[in-house]
Amino acid sequence: MTTELIGTLFLSEKRKNVLIFLLSGPKDIEEIKIELNVNTSALMTQIKILMDQGLIVYSDNLYSLSVMGDVIVQKMLPLLDMLDTYSENKAYWSDHKLSAIPPSLLERMDELKDCVLVEPELHRLYELPLKFEENLFKSTRIREVSSFFSPTYHSAYLELARKGVEISIIIPASVFNRFSSDYPFLLEEYLSRPNAKFYVYDEPIEMASSVVTDHFFSFSLFNNNGVYHNHSMMSFSPSSIRWGEDLFQYYLERSVEMKLENLNKC
Image (cartoon, rainbow, N blue to C red; front, side, top):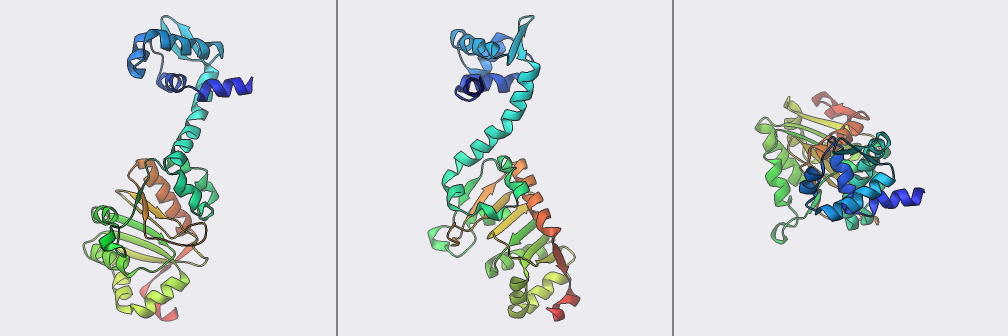
């Protein structure tokens, strides 16, 4: 019975679409036909299967989800979103270290909708990918978690900080120490600005970087063999931005803010 029900839910796009459409409330046959762009004969075949499984009911010329059908479809949606997220970038998820993502957020990867891989153009291999840079400069708030030091990033961030953009950066202690020794004046200018904050995370950061703004979310993971290549996985969906905010918050709660008076102690 379980196998039959799973087949009913997942082995037909028409059945799946009927169920999802009925989540918004009872519909007559014409509304369903228009929404799904199918003819009556094909639709009624699928509706009969769904009714036989007790997932939808018919009353007063309207089709609606049964009580249990509603519960099942509500539970089905996150799985469908997770499968879409995985299938859209299956090669990336398979080739990169997902263990770097906290378990609580790994379970919510269905929220990472419409991610696209962005890589730098050949003539600017060691610079920020153009799509990333263009959208970065449209942002009014930037929050980054990074495992490495990049003069290119920090030069861009300082330029934005001078324009009043709110910037918060979390880096490991070793990276902060290098920054403070190699670029003391740059770091001092950062820390002197009320809209720019640095935090130190005492443990290794296992992912390359994560950047979330009011405009987009972007992240870069290491390959399974530990190699990093210059790239960004970017998404502009609200759910992805929320996911990125929660990732930043995870690291923020485990980090210590650095202030100007801390510099001589590092």
